[in-house]
Length: 67
Image: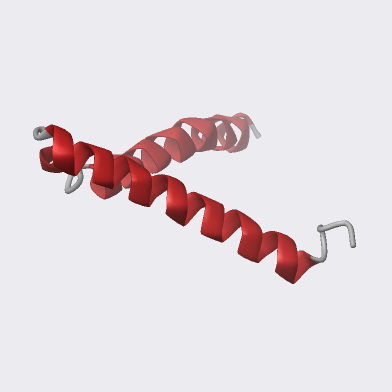
């Protein structure tokens, strides 16, 4: 039984490590774009636009908008 709890206690650390690895993999191609101010502004604007599009789409799909 002790071995079971020992294995279960490892899952939060695995989740954190996995999440940070995925985020690092997704962000690393974008880092060179922040070296020049013009591409940095465009990159930030595109990231904000993508987040807003995703938010509005999910709200519409889930019916969360008050009509």
